Length: 589
Ligand code: GLC
Ligand code: CA
Image (cartoon, rainbow, N blue to C red; front, side):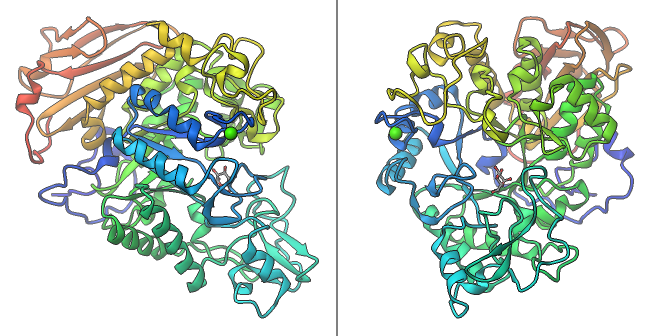
């Protein structure tokens, strides 16, 4: 029997054409404690979370004092954005020393205190690994440009002449002019996939590769549980003036993992790789021997299209296309992150629809392909649709990754350039600057005007209000932890006549859960069969409210969903835990 990825193919997956099925067997007995399979990851930047010493910049001391807040929210892992020494021209994604903490944020000592404080509360920490490029100020680049004999010369990518394709392949079109710039000191051209102050490392150079391992080893030793690896397709691509079409060297991923697994067995890599589903298995590895996790960009873009169009079908297609993966691998499921919402993989027509709905003004769009706003303003602050979006994020196959402030439905500041609009400080209270800092002027301004100003949107106030977004998020996280089927199980998309309604069922170890989402703003009535024979499928226990569902005589459930309504059900009675098996069970239904 085919036991690839996470098991059998769902109804919609069967429609999928081609897509070779890698021959992977489920490890028996399964490892039960792969923590990342069912984590709740919270992404934050130390610079904008909490300022403890009043200099207007967030720091580790401040972050530490907020660990109890995060613990209370129920998250199980923090993804910490770059905090190493950096001139900060790309919000820290331009590192000038991989082995030090940016002095504005604290010391290495503070960092270790922080990871320790997190661990005491059962929270793991993963950090960004930004090794596609360094800052132009990194001493490796400084030496490389100065001295052709330097050992660092070959750590970067040079060309005597301006390469013919210098004006192609920019990641930030419109802002970034080229991918090659002339360096006066070296009298050569250097390659930079991103901004010109981010020279690409020559990642095929074995010395560079050894250094990358050293960087990983260093932070692992200081208590992190792994890495969110930046720009992975570019890290592993061939680079150089001669390269017409970059080719990915996938085997590099294997050695990164092998090293990590040897040093600390339960540490992971979460890859940022916005790639087509056809290449997913190259990143995960057919034997599950490469990346542990990847962000699911395919589902992300189609999810926003589904929200904009009230049509679940392209989303179902994206779910089917990304269904296959090794048992030990996991998707990172997200709505918004610190970058623009990249819609580059949608069709032109689909993209324009999402623009019209969620970012109609040109000032809200970026790089010709995305929307730079935060989630709440994109959805017009409509609480029903915001809940729907999060309910989807928490119940689609994978591990949810939240962004700081989204638990408060924080807004954005479109006066700030590029992606900075969605990177404003956390809004803690109605005190000056939202309680983020005692400084007169924070380095990044706190949102202080309009409906998203800290006076109206802040954690202190929402904590007191049982119906707030904050308390909703806390409750949904609590429930998400009690449905491990989502992270571990196999899923099926159940058919309905109404494309606005998405129904999914997950099965795992004799237990099943079922989720219903109405993507449209009008009420919908749906009838569906759970696909499970026998008595069990006749009762659906509602996990969020009181309205359970009993199947009619024909075995079908009938639900009336309000606009943007969602339901979380457990199939069968609440004695499910007694039925749960300790080992994998044959497919249900
Ligand atoms: C990734 C990051 C982005 C950064 C870029 C360059 O795409 O998410 O924020 O600008 O890499 O490091
Ligand atoms: Ca500070």
